[in-house]
Length: 350
Image (cartoon, rainbow, N blue to C red):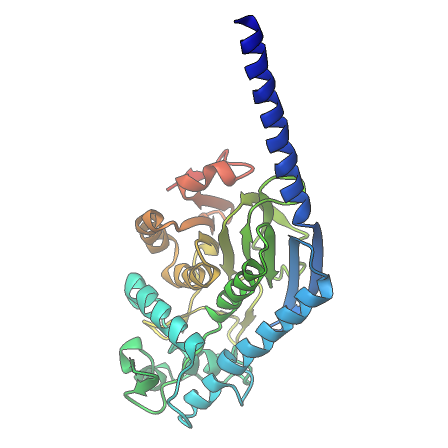
């Protein structure tokens, strides 16, 4: 009887060793962690992935995605499909524009109109769409062409109520492109990766140390243009996306000394200046995180906290940096995000 027990234990030990060796072999088969750096969408690209593929092959795939995104959704390329739609030279839409319009419609509804991709005439007038800003912005006249209700999709066409309605995907297209990059990596069989395009991130699996991917959230003081040097928080994530919106980099002072930020409230047509300094959003996709971040900035602190509570059931989590009455930083975060944060002392769970 004793001999049989020992024999069975030996089988278990051998089986366990075989399983571990097989697992180790599978991990080794996935290759080394390779890094790809470059430029996409006019900003930086940083990518780390465990793969047997050479970095130059991955880089070429990223450049193909970059070119495709620009051909479709760029407002800076006058020959892009979106630019031609804005000039009413065509009403045809492709899969990228359709996806982003449908997602934008849902977020516009959630925000009560605080998020709206028809905001381009206002953004351009304030000087944030590659055009020289106007000395005086006639908000009332421009608002005639702003409002998601002024467009609709019919088949493979976009229909405008007024030909002067124009679309701006800068609040969603970069996140969407990050998603395209992530999908490409997964189609190559890559299970552990992080893609970062201009601070908008999607990650899956683990880093080369076997832990979650660590991402820095920057301190949002005016003029902070040194990416990565002033980190306010470290967040550890896997199998999700992250994007941060803020008004501490893209702004200017007008002739009266007023701060004009690139976040425009489509409900009022005015530049948003509030005590919400930056909004970091964690979501299932980077397109969602990107758009929700812009939405929260337009809503302002109180409304943003209220909407964030409702969205938590959809896998959306937030980290808001606000300014109190004395100008000190105050942090509000989704309670579900707490295990991913390095520090939570002195902060407020919502």
